[in-house]
Amino acid sequence: MNIAIDVSTTAGFRTGTEEYIEGLVFGLHRAGVGVVGVGRETQALVPDKPRLGLPVRPSPSVWRKWWWEYVAIRRVPRDVDVLHIPFLAHPQARLAIPTVVTVHDLIPFRLASYRKNLKERQYFSHIERALPFADRLVAISEATRQDALELFPALAGKLSVIPNGVHPDFFADVDGERISQVLRRYGLRQRPRLLYVGGYDERKNVPLLLRAIADVFRRRRDGELVLVGAQDNLVIRRLVAELGLDARVAVTPFISRAELVALYNSADLFVYPSRYEGFGMPPAQALVAGVPVIASDIPALREVVGDYGVLVAPEAQDAWTEAIQRSMDTPATLHKMVVEGQLYAERFSWERVATAYVGVYRLAIEGRQ
Image (cartoon, rainbow, N blue to C red; front, side, top):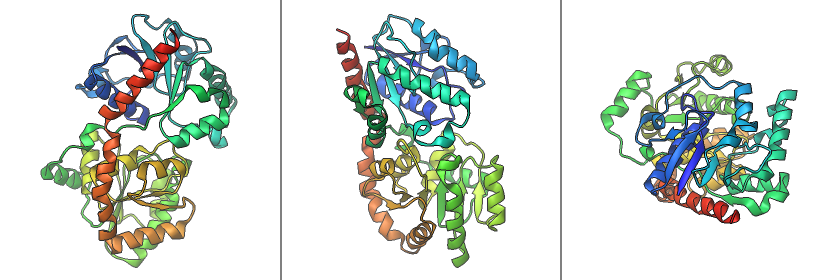
């Protein structure tokens, strides 16, 4: 079986979608499936090279992105068995080869703040009209499948659920010296160490987390919070200062995967207060790395975290304060979950996930016969 994956949006391999593409190619390669990338120069994707062997480039302009998704992708090479579009896009036409589309989330359809202007509304209206032309769709969680069924009930027969995978680097043992180097680089010295990894847009709910943490830190003198990737976020940095947390909250720039793995392995607690997710990759990474998790009690995160972490209502600041305080006071309670959580998290290996995708590719091919 030979698969083409749309890599038209890849730039610096910093986004969740890019990490998804990288992991899927790794898993498919291990499953013996040939993979080429389309949307840039058509070429084999190499899972053992950084960024799959693709050079870093500026993100494509909106117009270039739309041109590819509306028109140019229809000329995809026909010497492959399936075209996999790993994000919410498809032309308004049935292509010459079977297509599979990954539905990571339906944020623009669920949250009005993500479709504020006419251009965004037009684009997502196009997506709504185009999705029926896909041969198969994969939701990355049952929560996302339920959203899709509610919004697009006519697509029910095409939908499968396959969870995201976690990169194999997170499953590997980490050298203690590497961890020490990363801690020194970012000036991290206090324990217990709380870690947040994720975005900083509205739905991620980081201001509530900071207010809850401020309440915790007012009660105790130990501990620090690390916000990965927040260094250039002026809103977050201003709030940290307003809450008097400068000495207890460390912000980092965007960091490499190797540094991120080291930070997970240095953390005592992972916190994730998001209001809406299609899946929730950072909590899955934390489970794999053996870090106790406190996350929002929302459908997608219930699936990812299961019974192996603490779930808290995303708007309940006092409950977040209490959960964090209790976890810091009695860490043994959460650490009891960690061993079982790591076993549970084996379901997030990309080899296992890729095997499920091969089954979906076969369904797409059979549907054309």
